[in-house]
Every structure is written in structure tokens, then in C-alpha cells.
Amino acid sequence: MVDEQSSNAELERRLATLERRLGRGEQRTVAESVFWAILHNLFPEEARTHMKAAGREQLLAARVYLDQWIARLDAGEARDNGNEAREKIEIK
Image (cartoon, rainbow, N blue to C red; front, side, top):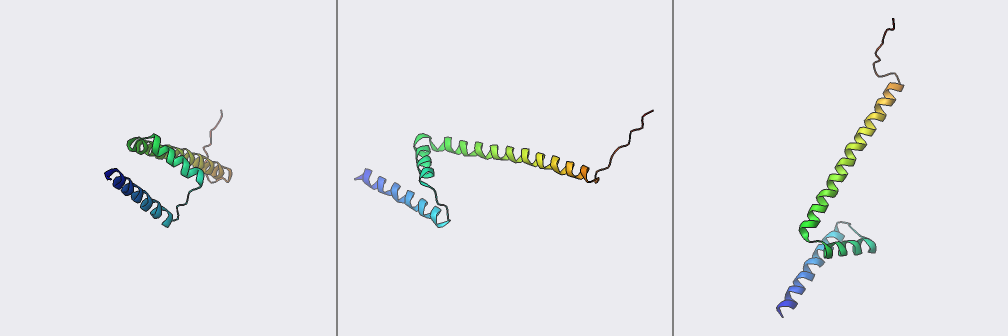
């Protein structure tokens, strides 16, 4: 009886979480749902927390790379438009 009650409480908790997600407009495909179900069954909560943080760090690294790339493109456009000061070197 205790197992059944705890099982029901867990199912109700999971259902409430799902309803909150759907209320916010988060809808997943079947493949996404299966992926996350497998992830939750294979990895403990602490491991999932670390994996989420690592994914965030990878996105931040990609942002830095893209920002640098954009800055180089902008600098190239400014140079092509003559907006960048040029240094004149005299040859003797």
C-alpha cells in the first residue's frame, strides 16, 4: 500500500510538471520525449545537472567564437569602405 501511494504521488508530480510545461507552450515531439525519458532513466540527477551546465558552457564558447567572427567581418567591411585609418609607410 505504501509503495502504491508513493508511486501515485510520483506520477502526480510528473503529471503536474508536464502540465506546467504544456501550459508554457513547451511541446515536445515523440522522439524528444523518448530521448528525455531515456536520459532520466540512465543518468542520476547530479549527472544531468553537470551535463546541462556543460552544454551551457559549450554554447557560451560558440557565442565567443561567433562574436569574434562577426567582429572580423565588420572590420573587413569597414576597411573595404575606407572607414578604417591606414598607416602610410615610406620606402626609401
